[in-house]
Amino acid sequence: MTLTDAIQKRIHELCLEHKITINKLSIICGITQSTLNNIFSRENNKPTVSTIKKICDGLNISLVEFFDTDYFNNLEQEIQ
Image (cartoon, rainbow, N blue to C red; front, side, top):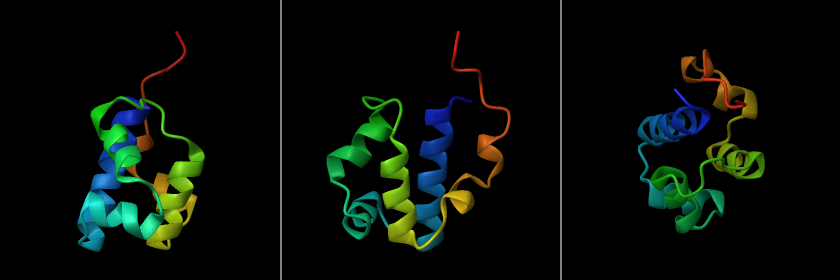
């Protein structure tokens, strides 16, 4: 699994947990819908930490909570 795959899965999981859509997430977090859509459409393969922090702030979770999941264990090496 790549880092982008893990981030996509985690965002999707958090939306399910909070019973919100990606559109609602963008409103809550102050992120444009296109920014989130780009994360999922792979146009933006590497979301910034700033974007992830905004998601965390909107959901009232820490960065540690965001990354504290098995999705981020055993990621593929990105430097080749």
